[in-house]
Amino acid sequence: MRVSAKGTLFSPMTSTTSPFIVSSRRPGPAAALLGVAVLAGLAALFTPQLWAQIEGDRGVVPLASTSDIQVNGIEVNTTGTDGQEARAKGWELAAREGWKKANGPDMDDATIQSMASAIVVEREQVGPRRYIATLSVVFDRARAGQYLGGIAGGQKHSAPMLVIPVLYSGGTAQVFEVKGSWQKAWAEYRAGTSSIDYVRPVGAGGDSLLLTAGQPGRRSRAWWRNVLDQFGASDVLTPEARLERQWPGGPVRGTFTARYGPDNTFLGSFSLSSNDEAGVAKMLAEGVARLDQLYGTALADGRLKPDTSLNVRPQLDPGLAALIAAGQKPVAVVTPGTTPSDGASPVPTPTPTTVPAATRTFTVQFSSPDAGAVDAALGAVRSAPGVKGASTTSLAMGGTSVMRVTYDGEIGSLADALRARGYKVSVGANALSIKR
Image (cartoon, rainbow, N blue to C red; front, side):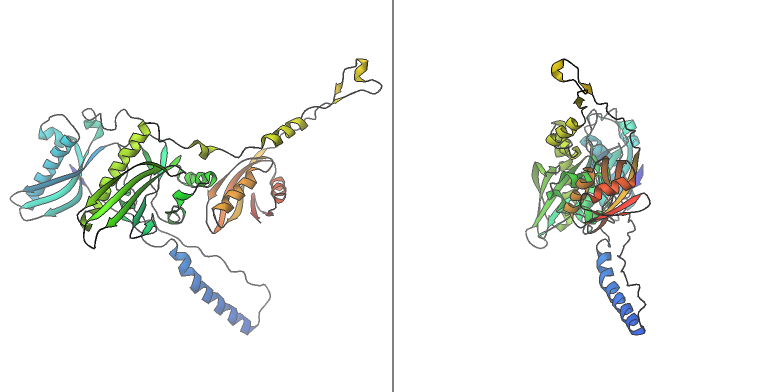
């Protein structure tokens, strides 16, 4: 039997600053010194603020999800001749109690121990002759699955779901702004046997800017599609936890709500409580497990499925489509000296044949001060003639974002089409830069 220790990984984060444009005119000595002083002052003023947007210890790396069967929240209290013997007895008792909690058939301790692949220590106290702990037992699926097939066995799995865990505590809402206990509980949840395919962001780098507590309130399908594409997800889950403290150091009441989709649809809610602050972590872990059950039940009932409106692309107006189709039909003409009343058949004008343009992929940079600007830029590019598709590859709110555009034609034709839509276009090497 091996021991699984919980650890936290930290991802390095980077900071970027915008370059300052200086006039090309050669300044005098006094002007040069003044310019250097101004630039130094601006750099000192803005660099810490820009760095503060993404710096700090924000997220927890999720544990690797496997198909093994984990039973959580097993409390043991054992004694022995010394602390090590008491601990060994506690782990044996945890495996036995975990097997019962998983509804396994009656078996001898040796067989149960052989199927327990790991013991996860949630909390422990080791004394000279006593061992008190809260443990989790992981049973190997290959060996225990035939006896515990009812657990996560024979059930359908969901599409990849992005998880945005929102915590309301102390009058504020947070996701990745700080290293929170609610996000930590979701990161440490072993979802290998769950019917939900959770996509759990780390919270490092740009995650803290993109996934905020206000994000579930957005309704723009184009914006949500861009966010989901960043994480390879089909839809979004928003598990909420609201903590209310009765008094400092006193009981803590938690209200947990399961929501999903771009409309933040309500699925269910429940409440848990803790006697003091020390029990909040355990309460949050239990809240994650019960929310997983709510999401699993919703999936089985057919209520939890990707929103089809997230995949809807902008459609051409039906009236305009009819006019375009009418303009492409061959026009019937009458030969000189004859009229339709003479019985002569109209001679159709032959439709000219054109060679289809080659489909190419270009990169388009655009300013993205807010979500509305992203939607407007995507809509304008997608509606341009010859554009087959456009999707963002990099989002930078308040800066410059990048989209990949599939176009039937040359880059110059795409630039002209975007200029016709009111954009100022700069053409580069297989790339465009557009702005209003």
